[in-house]
Amino acid sequence: MKYIKLCFRLLLGLFMTYAGISHLTIARQEFVAQVPTWLQFSPGFTDFVVLASGVVEIALGLGMLFLWKKKALVGALLALFYVLIFPGNINQYVNHIDAFGLNTDQARLIRLFFQPVLIFLALWSTGGWKYCKKLCNSCRKG
Image (cartoon, rainbow, N blue to C red; front, side):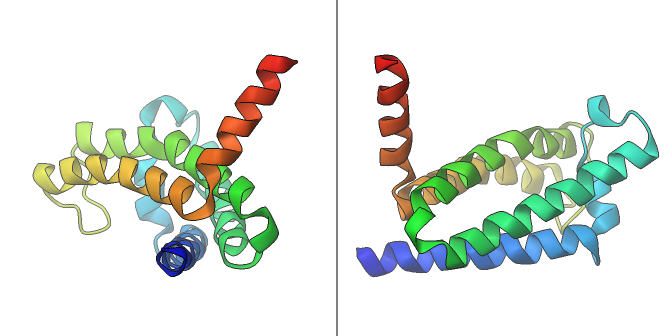
């Protein structure tokens, strides 16, 4: 089981690093289209959201790959990031935005159901579940 978790950590790390680099380069316009309309205050701000999320994705991806001693924290942060970007996926589905090969409503809907899987994998493969539970318990004790 230890090696399966390691494989998923590495895959998530590579995926996030690639996605982050894509935000800054080859897929920038597709990511701009993902930004929910309620966050599109101006073209400059929308572009900033894409660039900032790309930098965060690179940091999280590299964290998954190299910060072994902090893997639970990185996994919890990655899961939180997946929750925070979910409105972009909803925006893509609701507004029928073609991007990343998701060119049908069915494909976009399936993508929505994949997000909880990513959240689970980020927490499970890193021990993030235990980290979050420990953090919540320490907050309750005050």
